Length: 220
Length: 387
Image (cartoon, rainbow over all chains, first blue to last red):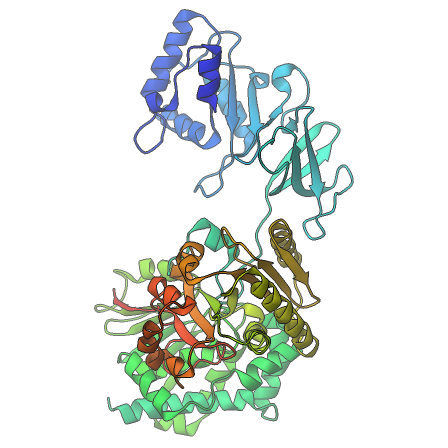
């Protein structure tokens, strides 16, 4: 999707294939070169990536002496998205934001998180980049609504209660307009708080568990 | 070691199981008191498990097959999981067939039947004379030449494999891992719907679907209307059985999983939510979604040509198949061995289509999926490997 925007807007962009190793990890040297180029040009840039890729990048850079210079030009920002589902390592959101801000020379307000999924046409973002909202609270566009629903009854819950996110996305013109997720959220006047994925029912006996089947971990 | 000696040991394990099955025996009384909390089954579910599904009267033919399925070792180390509550009997029978000395690590979550079997065998003079020496251990420590039987998730088995490699004392160990699985019910075009629905309900209720033989999917040949008729009949029979044998209590995560699964199916088909069951039917399935293991069944219309497409993702997990509507001779009295060539001979059936993608599943007539002969591992996908 992002490459469509890049083409439509005619902006300069470094796309993942240019910055990634064959195994999908970012090529830290390529990132350093791209940042240096942006700094030399003096134009603000937007860095987009998944949380897990950024963690690997930070780990790679932390091992280097002297510490490489990844400061972005003034006016730049960084967007991170995605969680750590199925990964072996998790980093707290606040810690990751702080490390990204320090590494790229940004104020924490210029590091913004996004929440979306393949099934949606629209996304939610933290509002700090637009000068509103607080970190950890995601804002939906006017054509999207998020309700927290009770996991058992699937009925909407009062504001402030924790439940599963049910998302109405009017931009889903050619697909389901309502998407019921297994993500736990709290909906308040400040936005949507993401609280992680609802744990599946624990395995019982030797029957194949639903999560086990979906993850493909089980082998006959 | 002679087969007679091995058989004598197995028979002592079965005798111990018979004490647990007997509601008048002290062990039977204790099992019925402890199992509802440990197993998650209702008291009626526990009675059904102990009274009708504990394998205490195997045929000689089945026992010969059991011996043939086992190796021989000086000592067998047994790691049990919170499997179906009756599973330790078969596990111990296999271990006793393998070795005169057995070390048992019971499940921490549901140790009841394993505890009672060990106690019964330690008190049994005939078992000691067999000789069958059995002890309960906190951790297993296999030595060279021993067998290690591990029951649990595939991750658990892999963990024991990793732990055992290179750490066992004095040489190679034979590992036999018994992982997780699912059952699939096949209702062929010639099956009589009402009778078969009753049979499938009898396979769903025992153990509340906690076992790897429990049917979770039911594929119905003959079109969407027939699948819907079958699902309605199944729901009615599950409802009636549920009144006699209620499902065990569900925790919030299980209730949430059932709610999510049911809601998903409302988008594509019909759902019957009973007090103790859940049946969903999809007349034109594009994909199958595994129901939670809590007396929930996904009924789907399917023709033989659809089977591979619908079940390919689940095929490695299919441990048991129950079939209705094939000639009786195709299954025979002991489904495990005699059915397989006959199944291959019946062309144009759901059974033949599934067998081509799940060749190691255990086959039986519907209504008998939860009553496998004591003829070896319940899950025929298990393999013995030397590590």
